[in-house]
Length: 198
Image (cartoon, rainbow, N blue to C red; front, top):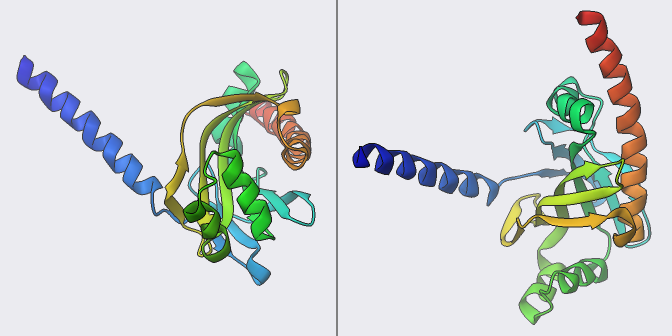
C-alpha cells in the first residue's frame, strides 16, 4: 500500500516539474513589425492573432482572439455556470521606462531586473480569472517575456493575487473593459449556437 502511495506522489511531483519546465522557456509571443506581437499563445495552447485592447505612449496591451471556437469552448461552461472566464493579456513595452515601472511594482527594483528592461525584456504576459459581474480578477500567472517572445524563468509570478478592476492601472482597466465587451458578445452568440445544438 505504501509503495502505491509513493508511486502516486512521485508521479504527481514529476508532472508538476514537467509543467513548470514547459512554462519556463516557453514561447508565448511571435514578434511582428516593430516588435509588436504578431501571434500570441492563448489558453487553449493555440497561436492566434492578437487584438489590441489598450495603448498609450509606453505600452500596448493585447488579448488573444477570443472569437476562436477553441477559446469559446474552453471558457463557455465557466462563463455560463459561474460568470467567469480565463483570459491572457500581453503587454508590449514601447519604452524601457514602462518595463522598469512594472518591475519596481513587482518588488524587483534592483539593478539586475531594471537593466533587463533595456537589454532583454520586451513583453509581459498575465493570465487571470476574470469575474465581470464583481469587476474583479484573480491573477493565475504573470511573467516577463524576452525580446524573442520566450518566458524569462527569473520573472515568473504564480501566486493568486486578487484585485478589483479599480485597483488596476488605467491601461489594464481599459483593456479589461474592451475585452469583456467582446467576450460577452461572443459568449452570447456561442450560447445561442449551443442551444440550437441541444
